[in-house]
Image 1 (tube, each protein chain N blue to C red):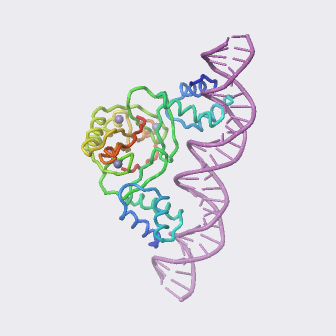
Image 2 (image 1 turned 30 degrees about the horizontal axis):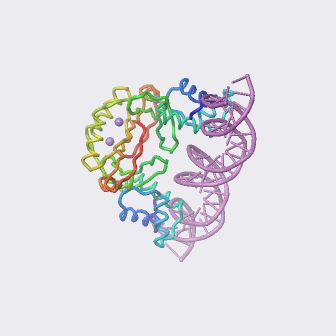
Image 3 (image 1 turned 180 degrees about the vertical axis):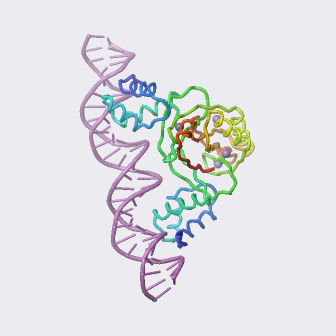
Length: 136
Length: 136
DNA sequence: GAGCATGTGAGAACTGTTGTCGACTGCGAG
DNA sequence: CTCGCAGTCGACAACAGTTCTCACATGCTC
Ligand SMILES: [Mn+2]
Ligand SMILES: [Mn+2]
Ligand SMILES: [Zn+2]
Ligand SMILES: [Zn+2]
């Protein structure tokens, strides 16, 4: 059975305070800095449990790092600022239908998808942010 | 300037023989097994150069590993079988427009996106493959 | 409270990837 | 066809993120 521990509660609470995506390492550092005593392994275990419970959503950065944020229940995608990390949740029913349809046309079943949009947000753009590319 | 070397030519050639996505490590192992002498660093440098040249497309697995395949020039996405790794290139102009539009509505500029569809292909499904989930 | 399955965490181990640096080599200049 | 050298190679070390190990601690049930 799953136990309530100080650490799990604390990790969960961190994501109440935080906007956008954050890595396990960052969460660990924040907690340590705030005086919480917790091990890095425990943070990893906690975020994974929260993802399994549907409490957190996770995506992977271009650099291969897993990042997490508190996630609303309905299916959606993310619009992420490359410069500041600011994140918007976006929905597109037509895209959902397209993905399922195109997969079905190829004979695929049990279909899921990942979709992330990256750009420079208005604030960062007016501040003069750099740019980057994404494979297709 | 960029030089033609035996190694770069060989890495490029490997992707002529191969369907679907393959990791740098796998390519290295294949080449070694086939008697080619090449260093792992060189394979990494070669695949990255090929990605930069638009010769290869790269995506990242759930496990965080970068995988590569020979890629047609036009912008597209991938429909990947979770069981056998078989990959179809798919296009959806409407999805492209949607991504740009929704990003623009939020004030984002310099917009790119990633979109991958996962499922079980017909062959694997009739063979009775397992299933998995993908975050949203 | 007692018993014990479950969770913790410091550190080691692992994985994919990148950096280092002396040796090597493609290739344009002469 | 040399020569010279910037570009390249590759064994190896270093790195970053993540997972494993295992002795110890602690929620939960009874
Ligand atoms: Mn979707
Ligand atoms: Mn697209
Ligand atoms: Zn921004
Ligand atoms: Zn398949």
